Length: 271
Ligand code: HPA
Image 1: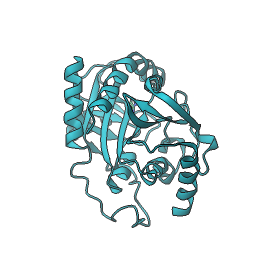
Image 2 (image 1 turned 60 degrees about the horizontal axis):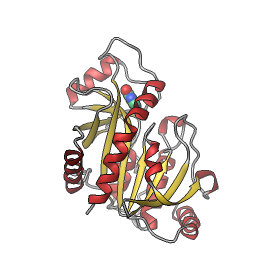
Image 3 (image 1 turned 90 degrees about the vertical axis):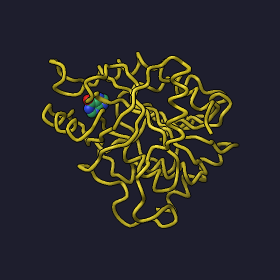
C-alpha cells in the first residue's frame, strides 16, 4: 500500500509547484466552489496512477490545485463512495495521498438528508460529531503504523477551532449556519422512515452516504478536519413525498453560491 501511495504522490508532485494547506472534498452539487479557485492546475482522476474512478452523476472526477482567497488549496471534485462498489481502501485513498503530499487540513462537504425537523432543505450544517457504527470502519485490517496509530482517538474528530472560524464566518456573512451530528449510512438506497426515526432517537441531525470514512482516515493521520453538510432534502418519512437524487442535486445547485461563499471565507480566516 505504501508503494502504491508513493507512486500516486510522486505523479502529483511532478504536476504542481506548491503544497496546498487545505484539501477540500466537494459534495454532490457543491462543485461550483471550483469556479472560485484561481491559478488552477487540474488533474483528472483517470490520469493519476492508482486513483479509483467515479461513477455518480454530479461528480466530475478531478483534483483542482490552486488558490482560494490567496490560500493554497486542492479541491476534490468527485469523491469515491462505498455504495459505488469501491472498497473502503479506495474510498479513503485520496485522503492518504493528501496527507503524504504534506497537506495538514481537510474540509469535507456533503449533501445530506435533514433528520432534525427544525432543518429545511437548503440549510447548511456544521458537523460537530458523527455516528457510523453500522458501517465498515475504513481502518479495518492491517494498520499502517507510518500513517497513524492502531486505535486512533475520535473524541474531537471535527476541529473545535476550525468550527469556531466557520461559525464566525457564517455570522459575518449573514448565513444561518446550523450545527449537528452527521450519521453515515452505506446507501445507495435512501433510508427507511423507521431508520430515520431510530437515527433521530440516537441523536442524528443529518444523514448521508459519505464523509465519515474520510474523516476517520484524516484523523488517523493527525489531519485537522472541518465538515459541512448541505441539507438537500428532508430525510425519509418526514414529508409525504418520495426522495430522489435529482432533488439532492437540484438543492445542492441552489445552495451552491451560499456554500461557496462560506467555504471561501472560512479559508480566508483559516488558522
Ligand atoms: N439520505 C442519505 N444520503 C443523502 C440524503 C438522504 O436523505 N440526501 C442526500 N444524501
